[in-house]
Length: 116
Image 1: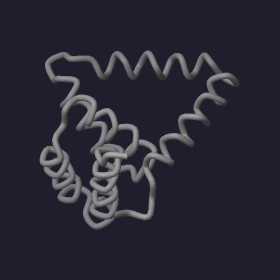
Image 2 (image 1 turned 120 degrees about the vertical axis):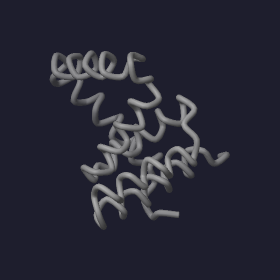
Image 3 (image 1 turned 135 degrees about the horizontal axis):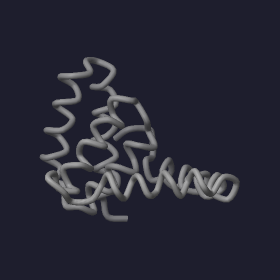
Image 4 (image 1 turned 90 degrees about the vertical axis):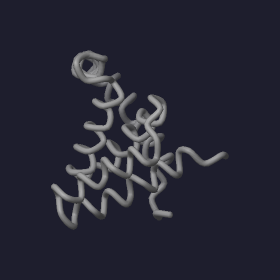
């Protein structure tokens, strides 16, 4: 398992986002509206869109994005095998650096799905 705790990362960032929302609520409201609009079922399902978001988070090497999008993938019923295929495409397209974060993303999936 990774030395990173994605439960801790998402908790910490979530609190920090709350502070930012109080300081600049308009930006946070706008981002939330964009998130909802972009994530809704359409031609692509919300599940597929969330897997794309995870792939972009891995490609951008964003721990917070990985944590939040893995959590949402789990909520939407994405299986571990589906995550592994998404991460395989990440490694193919992003090379070694993407592979390192792909391994972390799989660790995040395992961390969020383990019984407490």
